[in-house]
Image (cartoon, rainbow, N blue to C red; front, side, top):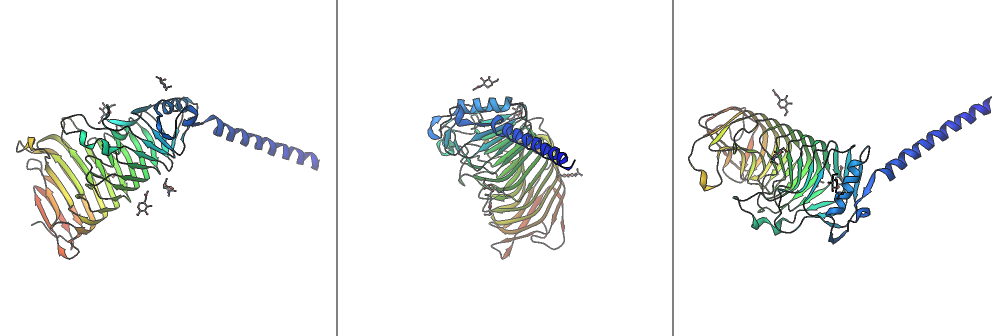
Length: 393
Ligand SMILES: *[C@@H]1O[C@H](CO)[C@@H](O)[C@H](O)[C@H]1NC(C)=O
Ligand SMILES: *[C@@H]1O[C@H](CO)[C@@H](O)[C@H](O)[C@H]1NC(C)=O
Ligand SMILES: *[C@@H]1O[C@H](CO)[C@@H](O)[C@H](O)[C@H]1NC(C)=O
Ligand SMILES: *[C@@H]1O[C@H](CO)[C@@H](O)[C@H](O)[C@H]1NC(C)=O
Ligand SMILES: *[C@@H]1O[C@H](CO)[C@@H](O)[C@H](O)[C@H]1NC(C)=O
């Protein structure tokens, strides 16, 4: 009796053991696709584009999804599109260095991920956009240079661990997506590199950016039209142009921006700190429910700036106001040093003045000693409690 009980007991353990082996085999053999098995060459000379596409196709079409494994080494990749939908979640595991082609590219992306639900990009690898070979070849009147990685129509994506270097345009661009999280990333390009925004978000919602270090030539993070529910935290930004909402109002029928929180970030040696900008003139849209909280500034030229007369090119002077309505924006506990006398600039639209701008707990000094100023026009704002600057001049 006792021994047959023991027998069945060990039999069932054995069956469970077999099942575990079976499951882990399926996981290991069935769902990991190494790009080298498809002909990718880690030598920095072979064009591995077709190999990556084949590996992608296999992984994406695999029932239950899988991992596309990029080993260490240098892989040259042309402009590439990884299309979904896929038959399960996909892990894009980058351990090596992916290198973009030199010079100009035909599309506005180098690598495009499109229509995928449940993509994770991870690993300890890097992307080199080879920006220095292209920055001088583009101008503002022609087509945009390629973003290193563009996401289009994605849902539930996670990007973590990797490094992006020297993009030709934006490092990461998110379009028409929902539920995208960036964490533990490093993004770098030289201070003077043109339009190398770290992460640009447009027409998307539920975006989280956490623990990302960004030093680049343009905005560390820029939030474009049609975006809601964005949380940016523990970001180290600089050099660069700071964290921006905008530019807004460049085109007709842009969506609103709302529900943006930027908290616990360090911004250093940047042109701007926290900025909202809209073109003048510009068609109507709205920005509302924005909170900037607990931000440390280190030698930032314009720590807090709302600029509704944004017009970087000479072509658009004095042709009317911005119709972008900015309301319910809080700046709380913004501390540190400004590189200029102007700690706060609120330059709002004459025809749709800013409403409900709150400033609390500001401590912005010039060189750690002198107080900074605040200048405001067309802004309905309130300074709460003792702070520096303490009122608009
Ligand atoms: C990948 O799949 C797509 C769609 O099924 C097909 O058009 C393309 O040729 C495939 N590419 C490769 C490299 O297998
Ligand atoms: C962050 O990413 C790096 C590089 O991929 C990795 O070594 C490290 O373990 C990651 N840290 C965390 C907390 O995930
Ligand atoms: C965003 O995606 C939509 C739909 O695919 C497309 O029409 C639009 O051009 C894209 N915008 C950008 C900036 O890529
Ligand atoms: C970001 O920078 C901080 C401070 O230098 C460092 O501790 C952290 O590991 C960096 N994170 C990444 C993802 O590089
Ligand atoms: C404001 O936005 C935050 C997200 O940043 C959201 O949680 C909150 O519900 C929004 N508040 C209102 C009144 O819409």
